Image (cartoon, rainbow, N blue to C red; front, side, top):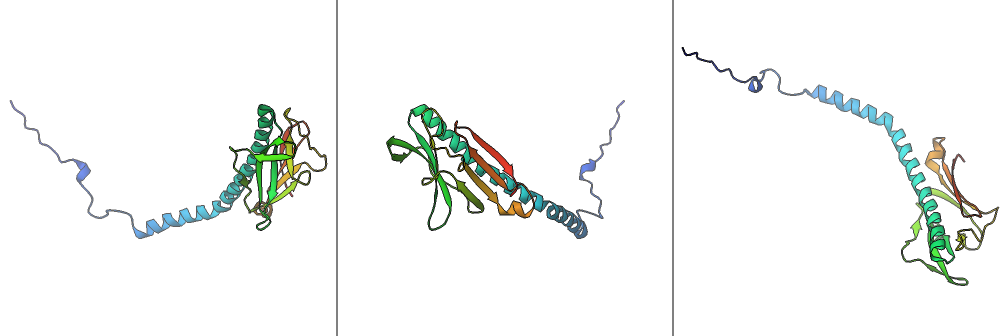
Length: 184
């Protein structure tokens, strides 16, 4: 005996006739909820971005100081990280240099001078007249001054939100460097 099997249409292709999508009210409600969440999280997001930018800039200076020290030790020549303020824009930049002969400093070719972003208030309190940290071939700081050994970056935006708005980089005579977060 043969049985006849009746095939049914797949239910996937059967759509109810009444509703095919979302209503305008539903879409507006979802967009409104996303807008409220975004507005609530925006200040926190901006604080995080500003904190991250300040941290990165301070760590770049810290890394450049360590790189200067290691270059002095590796190549057996005094090296320095020198800070310089542009007369026209008042922006600070820093560069690594090597002492070829006594008092004759040249920029090392593999380091491009770095500009500190203008949104940060910069205080360079390093020995005059060069505003530099000079490392000997032994890795010690030859121009160490107990009163003048810091570089401070400060964010006005973080200060307005009562956050830790300063990053202080201190240099010590032995060549070590300390990085501190603080409020102004």
